[in-house]
Structure formats: C-alpha cells, structure tokens
Amino acid sequence: MSQSQTDTLHEQSRELQQQFQSIMVDVGDDLWKYCRFLTGSPWDGEDLFQETMLKAMGGLYTRWHPTNLKSYLYRMATNTWIDHCRREKRHVGSLDELDEPREDFSDTHDLEEALEKLYHLFTPRQTAVFLLMEVFHFKAEEVASIVKTTPGAIYATTNRMKVKLKNDATLLPKQNRESKLQKDVVISAYLKAFNQGDLEGMLSLFSDPIHYEASLGFLETTKDEMREGSLMYGLPGHHAKECILWGKPVIVVLADSVQGPLVHDIQYQDVENGKIVYHRSYFFRKEFIMAAAKELGYKPQLDKAPLNWE
Image (cartoon, rainbow, N blue to C red):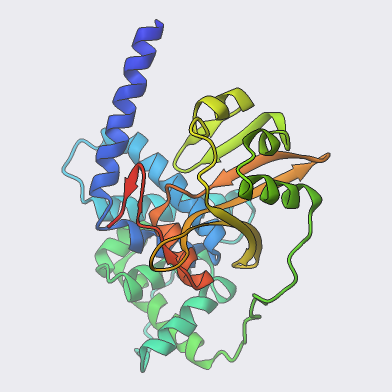
C-alpha cells in the first residue's frame, strides 16, 4: 500500500469516526453509565466504553440487516465484558427459569443503593440483566437476545436479584475522598512545569519512547510526535492539580471562566525509573468528563477547541 493510499484510508477512518460520534450523542451517556455499573468501577467502565466504541465502529460493516444502534452497542458492551470475565477465570453465572414473587423498589434511593451493590453481589450476566431491565428498560426479549438466554430466565433472574438486594444488609466500603494525595516527585515536577507553561521542562519528565494516549484511539509514541501533534501550540495556560477521583490519584486540568474553574481535562500517569512512561488523557471523553466533574464538585468545560459539547 502506497503512502497516499494510507493517508486516504486514515482520512476516511477519521470521517467515519466523526459520523459515528455524531449519532452517539443520544445514547453515549446512558451507555457509559451501563459500563460503569456493569464493571463496578468508573475506571473499568471507561475502558469498557472505549473498547465497545472501537469494536462497534470496526464491526458495524458486518451487519447486513437494519441495525438498532442502541441494542447493538449494549450487546457489544455486555459480550465484551463477559468475555473479559471469562479470560480472568471469573464465574459469569447461569440464568435459570424459576417462579419467584415480584419485588419492586420503593423509591429512587433504593435503586441507587442497589446499583452500588450489583458488582459485589452478583455474577456478570446477572448484573447485565438487572441493568438492562430495571435501569435502561429494555424488553425481556431484547435482554434475552443480548445475554443469550430465554425471556423467562430474564424475569426470574431480575425478581430473585430484587429479593436479595432488599434482604442484603451489606454496607459497601466508602472511598475516602479526603485521603492524603501521594506525593510523587515526578508528578510534582510535572505539575510545576505544566502550571508554569514550561513545555520542554514537562517533556523532560517523559521517557522516550512514550505512550501518550487520549481517547478514543489517539496515540503518540515519541516526544517529537507530542511536540508536532497534541502540544504543537504549547501548554494551554490552565491550572493543573492532583486530586483523588473514584479512589485513584489523577491530575485535573482546570480552565478559568466567569462561572469559576471548569474541568478541561483529567489525566493520569505511570512512572517508572524516574520517568513518565505512560500518560492518559480523557480530554475527548464527554461522558467521562461530565461524570468526573460532578464527582469532583466542578462544572465541565463544554466548549473547548476543537470540541463543543453545548
């Protein structure tokens, strides 16, 4: 394949990605929440969401019949997670048809509490059934198709789960958001360079080669690629600080505005041998940024070039 053919293919793939993102507007937020509660973690949920998006974009051409995008995406996410659990040797569970009395939740608070317990009390398939039926309101026939069972098993599983959730008094441990931040020398130096606009000082902290990743699929592997790509205009002039987000130390980049500071980006880095060897940015991830901003007590920056989420 010639370089011109490769360039054309890259351009076409970017156009396809943009088209796909435009039709994801109506389903992206709920799908992200589904991935979060299915995996039991916002971080694992974000990874599952991104893997689902990449698989969906890459596999949509194989569909020869009219496709309901919502069902297609939830099926992709569910099967991807169950396959992951199987590789990890985790019991994914069976779904039996048994007559059970129907249980209902009395209010929204009960349902929210139930969502926090799903991952810890049930198998991956059971968790998927509950979320699809009770939270995202798929029909039993649709859920049966997604998790590969019968509608009767879907009804029975959901009812048994409701009984167990009502009777279970397990209190899940709460993450301590006030926990002391890890004082890593390299990250402290990164924050200092970032906040001073010292691009070369910041780059000196990275290994070469580097894995500099932003969702979905954006990757730079050398400092030169960073200089000529994502950092070609230098540092943004925003303020970065270290925070704990869902139990994980991260860097939050804040942009000033008349509304106060807005979440511009969420980042985290892995450090080995005194160098940053892996950097991940969630700049492009609307659903993740919105949820993270709420968790941190800020508003998200909705209009940030080249993105406008308003």
